[in-house]
Length: 116
Image (cartoon, rainbow, N blue to C red):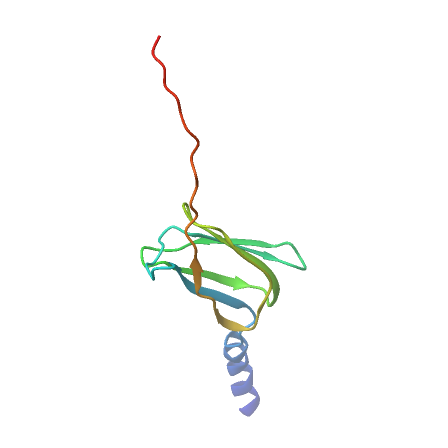
């Protein structure tokens, strides 16, 4: 009877084990405003496996089921300088990384319009 009970409970305990990492966070600008539509790229340093996500209307992004280990991360948004960090270590379970992107000012060159 005890053996039967252990055999029935074993699959449940196996399902409860966490074997991957999740990465979540908020992308904001230097004024504290959230940035919807920011793109988050995550690349494994050891395998080259790539993950990507976009921040939602509240600037929140999620990447699920990444393997544990080292990653290079790059976050971009139009009008802002890209954020890049190498050797970001993800551990089992949930990992948080909130990012502040700086404005990217671009000096436009003079345009001359002539009529003919």
